[in-house]
Length: 91
Image (cartoon, rainbow, N blue to C red; front, top):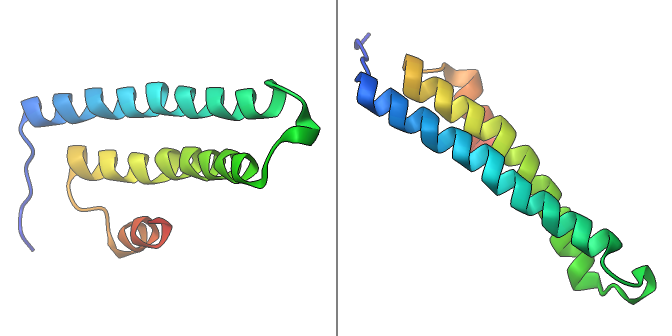
């Protein structure tokens, strides 16, 4: 099996990007969900806006699961067949 090493600068940059991706990205998605839910008359919400809210919820879940797997891969090396297939399935 091949030996896999990651430089410290790559691991630090990847971790920084991951933290930004999770906090800022999910925060903005959560803001969209809250605006769609409480921003106006709920009876006037179109189907498109409801689907956007559902898509944001799914995107938050995907970012938390797949982002963590990608970060583990970036820092420690290959993650194994099961986690790689889970990431592929979630896409």
